[in-house]
Image (cartoon, rainbow, N blue to C red; front, side, top):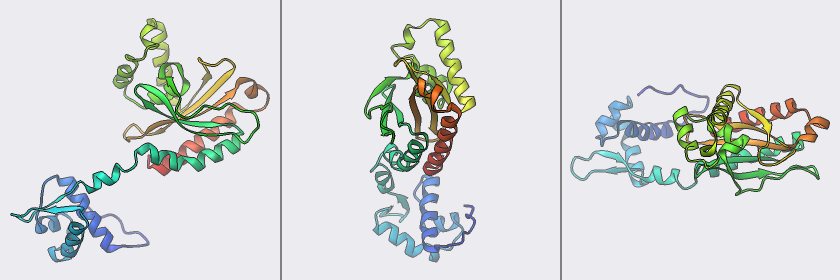
Length: 256
């Protein structure tokens, strides 16, 4: 196993423990103390105490016959104590608050749930008048800017699979379907989408995707604003720029 470059602050014991866990996860089979030591480029005596500690803490299980070590389900259980979206909401809170204060607009965070767009978090505007998208509200993917942005994170095959179950998309003619698929491809290329709402008159939606195609977090950050405000008070470029900066910050926090 290649060693990680040293940092300013070293924790040798922690490094050994993580090396053991990562190596056992990588190999996927029970291994002896000697085999583990060889795999992480250490001596058996170097890792003896760490193996005992990890076993006592429940991270490793040692077989009764050959004495080989394997990972327990403790790591799995810990990782599922909170869903990825609980963590997303937690880390997105302050960037979204800053976005709301900067733009003077409410912003909301959405994910896909049962082939629909689900709003899971909202940061209200500090202004006395603004649009509010309530948490827990479902919207059709095919009819929303955020839905199109979310679909841009999936492969073409998966997009079509999801849309094949969308009650609106199923009724459209070929031209309408191709227009939506083209829009999704443009979002994939541009990284954002700005369009007038199909569901609410006089409203413009601006959305950016969060996460990455290779992660287990796919979400959308969006601002819905009165179209008249864009013409009179607020620059669309200013909002897009603020959304992209917030997108970058949240992606950094979730490791995408």
